[in-house]
Image (cartoon, rainbow, N blue to C red):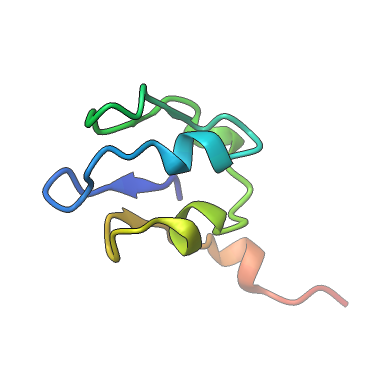
Length: 71
């Protein structure tokens, strides 16, 4: 599942754009809400969710296939 940004909560700080190693987000960080440009590249590291200063601005659901433990 790709990350989703809540436009009502996001302040447009651009921290998620700077932190994402896979460049999933695009934005200027000048009060502009970032866009999710490459959702298929996200590998669900949760750094965008954990480091976002606004709680609940980014929602990320881990796909079921990543939740199932491998033997």
